[in-house]
Figure 1 (spheres, one colour):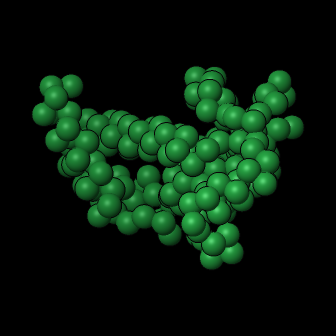
Figure 2 (figure 1 turned 180 degrees about the horizontal axis):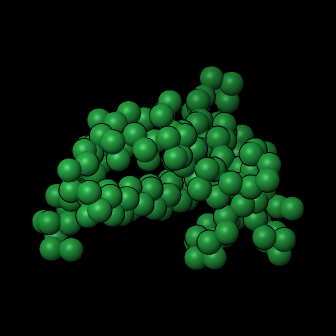
Length: 162
């Protein structure tokens, strides 16, 4: 098996790991073919350690004292067997994280719309709490953040007539 490590926001890592739960909880197997192709399009050959260290030294940073959040992955993805590359640059990790965020906010919005159409009197907090429980992300994010993200998306859709 081939693996790739990512460092993304903790609530997105938990969301993806629950959404695409594998047999082993330490790894996530992406089953959506479009998402798999999207991730594989950012794979690169793993740069050698000497090249990474020299690039850090060239930027006048101390290797021991520099903090690079991308060096501490919080999500490990299982890749298809035919993939030989297993490195994703920090810039591409941000792009993948944005895709995960869009999946997450779209699923949240769909859940709200579905539940509101079934029961118009249901509160947003109830829907948010159910979503948090479903994806076990309560320790990473609070309902006020959910509300802000949802309102931001609704305002954006109204402004752009979507």
